[in-house]
Amino acid sequence: MSVQKTVESLAIAAKKASRKLAFESTTRKNNVLLRMAEALMEQKEFIQAENKKDLMAGREKGLSAAMLDRLALTDKVIDAMIVGLHEVVALPDPVGEVEEMIRRPNGLMVGRMRIPLGVIGMIYESRPNVTVDAAALCLKAGNAVILRGGSEAIYSNLALAKVLQEALASEDINPAAIQVIPIADREAVNALLALEEQIDLIIPRGGEGLIRFVAQNSRIPVLKHYKGVCHVFVDKVADFDMASSIVMNGKTQRPGVCNALETLLVHRDIAAAFLPQIGSRLKEAGVEIRGCSQTREILADVKEATEADWYAEFLDLILAVRVIDDLDAAMDHIDTYGSQHTEVIVTADYANAQRFIKEVDASAVMVNASTRFSDGGQFGLGAEIGISTTKLHAYGPMGLKELTARKFIVYGDGQIRP
Image (spheres, one colour):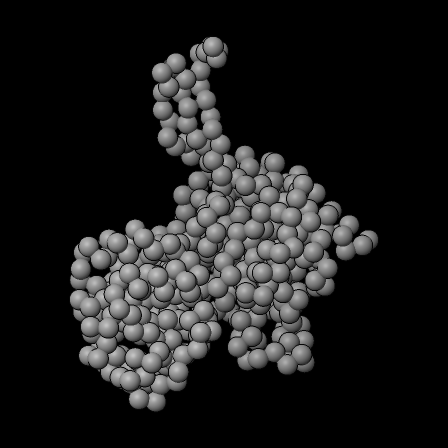
């Protein structure tokens, strides 16, 4: 069977499975998630044996130590997946929720009910634990899912899919509700992106190159974010200790993630006092600073920032720093160079904080808090399937509710339109 036909057959089966899954009770969905958690523990040796094949192939290909670490399904990683399944069980089920029920003047009752999206196509890289995380969230929201992980994790992902599908079958739910594409070739991605009749939404997770490829080639709606160029603006009335802690946490806790801080903007009135303080701490932490001309006048041994640095998602211990005239200049900079991911103001000025919240266009806008809080778990969603910096139909971290849509429901007692 050709790649196109293979992927199409998976999608047709997923569409069929999604129709029944949409009406499964919360109890039935939770029971199968708990069975999946048990199955991961029971079949851990099988999963890890398949994972070793990927690790061996990865070493032969020369994958970096960091990539191999992301690929490894250690006891700790599998335990975390099991905990994650239990956390999804504990989340409220959004399917069937009725909101905004109102009575119209003609007596009609009009409301909106949350329903599953249908079939989700998930395209991602590296971490095979995403297979379980994504499958669990899609299932709880009543969606079938077709998963296409990176070629470097093909054995691991197929093993996890086998375990999850057996759990579905044991609870009399169609195993086609969770499928992994068994083809490593990129042709399978192209085939998936063309199936607009069977797939309702594509969610890519990975590097900017992957996401742009998906967005440019998909005939299906795509929820995406290309990169996280996150800013902190330190206002002239900011508390220096607070600002320093927020900057350090944003830049150094996990520099390789999309909600890490990439550019620091400092009000010119405090730059001479604040920059030496934060510069010293950043240097001690091994952070390379790339600054504007005013920054370089204040801090010694700072590299000159280029125009490209203001657009950059470094994902490393590198920070672009710019001295800004005022709040308006800071917001202009963010509007020009930001990626609509996460933006922060550190200030004691209530009016400035409110302006920043209202006027900055980003999926998460914060006052006096680290960019690192831009996360589904931290925002109370329980778990997330990704982050969207597009506005249709989700903006920001995506949890269960973002894997549903709302349909209008109407109750009447014989009304006809005049």
